[in-house]
Amino acid sequence: MPAHDPARTAPVIPELERLRRVWERLGADDPLWAVLSAPDKRGRRWQVEEFLATGEREIAMQLAAAAQLGYPREHGLALDFGCGAGRLSRALAGHFARVIGVDVSASMVAAARALNEGIDNLEWRVNTGPDLAGIADASVDFLCSHITLQHIPAALAAGYVAEFFRVLAPGGVALFQFVAAADRSLRGHVYGAMPNRWLNPLRRIAWRRRDVFEMHALDEARLRALLAGHANLRLARADDEASAGAGWQGRRWIVVNEAQPPLRCEHAGSVHYVDAGDAHIGAALLSGQAYEPHVAALLRERLRPGDVVLDIGAHIGIHALLAARCVGAQGRVIAVEPVPRNRALLARAAQANGLARIELIAAAASDRAGMVELLSHPATSNAATPAAAGARLRGAGGQLLQVPTVALDELLDLPRLDLVKIDVQGMEALALRGLQRHLRRHRPLLLGEFNPPALRAASGIEPLDYLEWLRGLYPAFTVLHRDGRREHCRDARQVLAAWQQANAAAAAGGALPLELALGCD
Image (cartoon, rainbow, N blue to C red; front, side):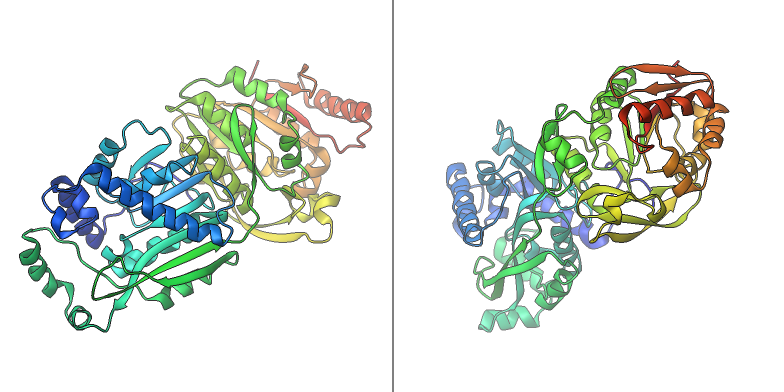
């Protein structure tokens, strides 16, 4: 599974490209009328204040309808799909910490920027693909789309609705309008009988324009089938809606995500999201504890702008976010994480912090491609192979996950690699064997957890054999103790002795791992 590249080129889809061209010209010519095409406003006759006031009224009605249902539970991120000149986005900015407006037309987005200059929590994006690339899974608290889907061919529109369901956050709400069919009026019978290729010449005559927007109906049964694939989503309301105009049966759906929202917290200068029941990392962050400060200190010390970082076992992204801040806009952070709920929290945090350059690989790193079984549990964000799982993972309510494995050497061909951080519950030996071409070529700084019992259980490899293999790549080891001390070891037996001493001092009985750094001499 390839790493996600936020800057990837969108596929060219003829219907979507035609839609883009039409709205580019409409946006360049008369953007406010193209959004709200009242007959008396054609020819740039909309007054800006009057135009924006319609957005305030529409959003007030949408928020009131959602509030009656108890949603959204958070007011973090709002998304305006088909933002046009930004009238709804602007209204949302007064209610949410951050608002993203997306539109297929660059000319419309340019109009939105000009009309809303100086509003700091508004972000504009030109979206020319069939998805919502760059919007993280389960991250949007309030999603609205008004008089937009009705102008998009049905197959494309259904794909966007599927994306609405993907990005809707736990505790979030999506309100979107569409047309289900032509109505039973005389005009509706004409619309229902005549395809757009026949109606468009009539529209050109009526509107005195070469470029006209089309109307497309979206089957509600198709949307219900899409919704059925999301266990936590529920159609809370489905109402008739008149904004499509005479001749059309307009509909508005309100879909809510009934899952428990994650908790938002700040740690080391970044926003993070954690599950409320996570007794492992989540509890520590929520209580204000520093997470692995001995590892964070080395990251800050060694990373430079432009560096490339590989975080294997990225979990919810604590170190990945720190690394992304250190390497800056010219750098690159690739995060490998097999557990879906952890990836969702990581991606949402990256988005909230403006760190879209973090790339996610949805797999477990190993020495070959295949599948592996991991045991997870609602009480912890950790996961491990059943053989290496601790008591909490083995407790009642645990769940087995089937996740893909990848050999990173086969997946990646990095021109540079400056730092590798790895913490994969005893699978370190297998994961690094699958990365050894990059390790030998680039000699990155390597930060890795050393846990002898987990190594034996998860990988079937003796700890000394693993250390000797590492010793063939790097001349020495540095033990990063939790109290900030750094202990230099020349051979594998010294490292094993340091682990034994640390466990004896903590009375941990072998359960305390060591953090090793290689290549920092």
